[in-house]
Amino acid sequence: MRSLLQITITSQPSFIFPQSSSSSNAKNPILTTFSKNRRRQRTRRRRNGTVAVTAALRGADRNNNTENKSNNNNVIQIEQKQQNDSNLKPLSIDTLQSEALGQLSSSSSSTTELTGKKFAGFIAVPSHAQANSRSFIAEYCRNINHALQAAYSFGGILLAASLVKFKNVLDTPSRTYVEGENTVGNEYDAWTKEEILEYYWGEHIHLGYYNDEDLAKGAGTLLGHKVKDFIEAKEDFVDEMFKFSKAEKSKVTSVLDVGCGIGGSSRRLASKCIGNEAQVTGITLSQEQAKRANELAKSQNIPNAKFEVMDALNMSFADNSFDLVWACESGEHMPDKKKYVEEMIRVLKPGGTLVLATWCQRETPPALTKVEKSQLQFLYDEWAHPYFISIQEYGRLVEACNPGATVTLDDWTKQTIVSWRHSIWAGVYDPLPVFTRPKIWYKTLRDIICLERMQRAFKRKLMIYGMMRVVKK
Image (cartoon, rainbow, N blue to C red; front, top):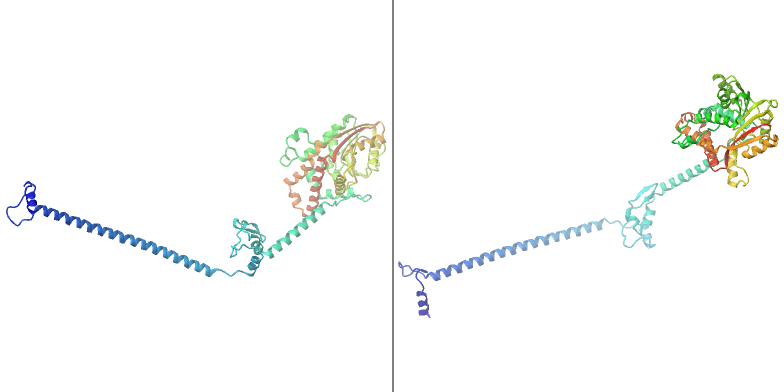
C-alpha cells in the first residue's frame, strides 16, 4: 500500500505541489493543506457552539425575565385582592334581611351605589346599572331621603289644595244681582271710580265692531291686536249700529240712550252720527257714570248731550217723546225684560226707530242642558245680570206691546266676538295701570276670567250678539 501511495503521489504533476529542494525534511504539501482545513472546521465548530450557547443563554435569560414579571404580576394581583378583601365592609342588617327575603341577588355581595339623578329625595332618573339590577327596588328604598321626601310631599299636597281652593273661589260668582239693592248701579259706581274700565275700554262700555277685512288680518288676536285699535273698534260699532237703525239724520231731533254708561255712544251720536241738530239724553242707574259723562261732554264741548240718573223700567219721560231710542248692551242688566221693552216703545214716537244691541242666550228649543245652565248661571252672577233671553224673544216682546210694528233681527256674533279677548290682550301689552294698584288685582283677575268665559260661550253658540231694529206703528 505504501508503495502504491507513493507511486500515486509522485505521479502527480510537479506544478501542482512544487517540492522544496532546500531541505529533505520539508512537509508534504497535501497533508499540510488537509491539516489547515481540519483546523478551520474545528474553529468554525467552536465558534458555532459558542454562538449557540450564547443564544441559548440569552433565551433562557428572557424566559427567566418573563417568568419573573409574570410572578411579580401575580404577586401584585394577589396583594391587591388581599387589600380589597381587607377593605370589604360587613353587610348591614337591612342587607341581610333583604337577602333573606330574596330581594337581593345572591351574586351581589356589596351595596351598589345609586348614581341616578335625584330630586326632592327621590331618584328621578335611574342609572343604566340600576335599571338592570334586580336589587334596584331594595337599593332605591334604602337610599330615599325620607325627611326631604316627606317635606316635599307635604308641600305638594298643600300647594294642590291651595290651587283647588283658589279655583273654587274663582269659579264662585262674587257679584250676584240682588233685586231692590241697586246692584247694577253700585257695581258701575265702583268701576267708574277705579278708572281701570275707562282706561282700557275708553268712553264706550260695549264691544267693538270688526269687519271681514279686520278679521282676515287677525284683528283682536294676541299677535294681531294692533291691526285695529280696541277703542277704535268701539267707535266703529256705534257708527255701524246707527247704519243698522236706518234712521234718517234729517228727521232725528231727539235721541234717548237707555243705559248710557259714561256717555260714549251718546256723545258720538250728538257730534258725528247725527250732529248738533239733535238733542241726545242718556240715562243710567249709576251716579258716578252720570257725573263722568257730563264732565266729558263739557270737556269735549258737546252741549247737545246730557246725562241723568234714571230707572229704565220706570222712566219719567212722557209718551211719544223721542225720534230714536238707542239701547246698547243695557238689556242684560234688566230684571224685567218685558217692562224694559214696553217702556222704550212707550217713549218712542210713532214712526220712530228703536235700535237695540244686547248679549243673548240661544233660542230654545232644544232645551238648555245642565252644563249650559251652569255656564249661564256663572255669567249671570259674576257681572250682576238677572238673566238673558234670546233675540227672538225680544222680537216677540215688541210684537206683543206694539202689534204691527216692523221688527228686524240680526246676529252680530261674528263681528263682535273677538272683542272679548281683544280687551284681555290690551291689558297684557299694557299692564302698568293694574300692577301699580295692588288693591284691584283680584277684581281684575276675576274680570279677565269672566271675559274669557264670555268668549267661549259665544263661540259655542250658547250666547249670541243680538241686534234688533223696530219701527213703531
